[in-house]
Length: 124
Image 1 (cartoon, rainbow, N blue to C red):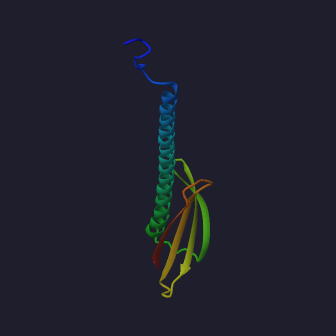
Image 2 (image 1 turned 60 degrees about the horizontal axis):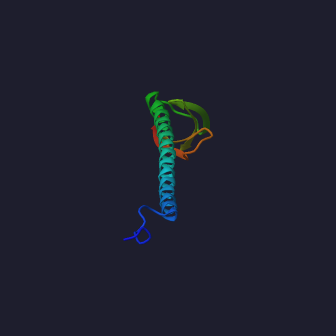
């Protein structure tokens, strides 16, 4: 068999370029997924801190046996270095011995939405 009749060994340039394009697309998809996972984890982390803050505020009212005034109050708190804004809404209930308290907490200037927690307090 002469040299001209033997099949060429290896890959053509076109085959290498197609393989590289497939690898590049797969790597971009993997990086995108990793980025989304990181963002989701951060949102979950901040929502967890917001939930803790709402639970803490309601537990404090119960522990102090507080009888808060009707209306809305707001403030800023911090959990694990995350700055949180809270809003506490106190409403009257048909039975005057009880008040409904709703606490809404969100990350100050960040993502993650708002966490809401409601509870009922009994007059001390």
